Length: 359
Length: 168
Image 1 (cartoon, each protein chain N blue to C red):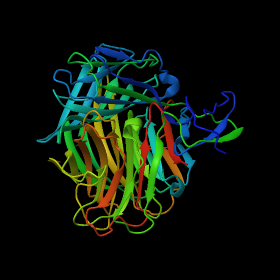
Image 2 (cartoon, rainbow over the protein chains, first blue to last red):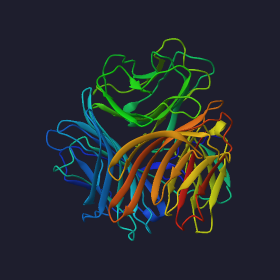
Image 3 (cartoon, one colour):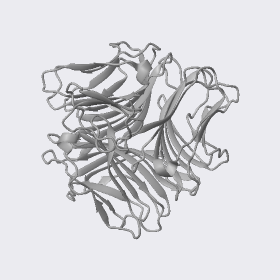
Image 4 (cartoon, each protein chain N blue to C red):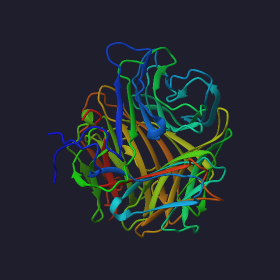
């Protein structure tokens, strides 16, 4: 029996606990205050959107506002020209975005927060976007070498001076699930600040195209698109377009590996890509994260495998993309077989989640 | 209308999103942990591993430890960038003193696949490895169990494995 929508912390699922947007004037730092309890919470997801700015382009964060030389970093750093190693020890902050002037940036970090051991982070970032030019994608690992203190706060800064107006800072956590005997069941279509399934499409037969609509990107702020499909053809993979935009309004930079060979590709394209190489009757799987709020170019980060048969994976690909549209509210995603011959085969599945930090 | 949950009660919440199905922290006396699932129903899992041991923790599906899992990775190990493809006996892994964050998709009647990000620590403020894997389990059967096993001995006390399933 549906009894309404739920808000607040719900045990056992990921929920937004901190949401801050810089408005009015640039600000030198933003602190969560002591709202965290790393030892109980276990882990956090930290999401940063950085708008383009002529001066400020390097957001970072500190745990418990520790500004000592207690952080380390190692990255797979890809630009249009190369894929190289970047590493640092003795930093005084966690690197989130390797940005540049007048470029937007976007990062997602996963932080394991319990004390008793060093705190580790995985981060993926799309650091430099302007229009349809995307200039870096970085996968990185970071460490905070403090093993003793409970994590109680995160402080966001920008090492070029200030956090620019339009910067968005989000932290998600999962409350511990209580393993007691349930005394009842509550069914709700929606939990404020948790990932909500806003559309699932499972192909009942071979298909050419479908659309998931009735979305509200400005309300949802973030979309997570999961795909696992079988099919494809020599002419391409499944193309995802936003609001029916099929023009070359999507920027891209990707790094791929096939066996031991590493390569890159960049330039404007006409969709969000779900594969790098196309081939018939192969598997493509991945996850796409989109910062959807209008006002700036929309950043996209994708991790995927493609052209896979049996146990042989054709490519791993990390994609940084942009949708060069700053004004439109996102209302739909269309998934189209680029071969135009219904090569999205039966049982393929696609799901869209929305975050809705403010309900 | 806002529904209020009695904070003293324990109610099962049904909603179309991710729900925690395992939160395991080792006491140091276990060598594996498993959870029963239905991949055809859930369609997707998120698996998080924080390994405090010097041996790797491997994740397998339906107890399959054969070389039925394909991989392709991109790696920075100590400053050297490389990539490789092959097969092994697990869908995901978490190396020594590492964290792994994993996404597994389990469509009905198709092979099961996903990816993981892994960061491996050495000492001080040194990160040794940053690695991105894509993985596939060459099996179209329903996933009925997810098992985490340490390569040797028992988990180090404090090692944590958390799994979320997409429930509706």
